[in-house]
Image (tube, rainbow, N blue to C red):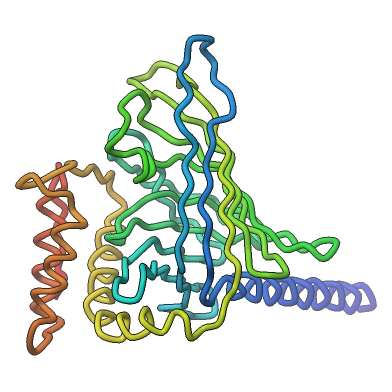
Length: 311
């Protein structure tokens, strides 16, 4: 009897500690919300070939508004919006954080993602960061633990991804970016640090590492009022993008390999979905009709048809 009581006390202590840790994780994830002055910096650091020509460093900056579009006890979805000047909003990337998630889509190469199931024991206490493109399509996903030690709070993971948009239309000498991402909360906001490998992947041969790259993206918090334009923009567009996420989620639930055409009618997917946004929101918005048209648009880019209800 005494042994059972001790076991129950140990179990209760472990559960309490796990809940405390999860609460810290959630606080760190939500600490990324707000209005930020963002600086994007990327520089190639070294190459495997002596005759490699290093590409110019990339620098950019903007205001960026980060906010939750979905929140449950095991999931927090953060949308990013770029604020350009006083008149323009650009829908940027989205990061979903899912607790003890076992379902991943792993990038292979050439615009193709493969479904992967993770064992439950391997993701205990971990969060999957699912990163999506501007059209809410796949980009990269990885599962790791948030670390809270010595006053620091960070999450780090390595995942394969397609070329970043800053190089997508500029280069064809590599086709996979192996990304080591670290997101760390700071006293003024947060930092997205990257150590990336630019890899050429062909058939069943070993990956060829072309060059490595350092990324240092800083998010420094500013007054929320500076992002008012983004807040107003989202209030007008959120119904449409909620339906876009709904259709994508239905597609991901198929757990099939997803391979996309680069262009249809000489247009990339985000161009068509943004045009559909303006069209469906110009008048009385109907979710059923919007989901059907969104599904038809996304399906037209798939190399293999996946049946979607999307009603």
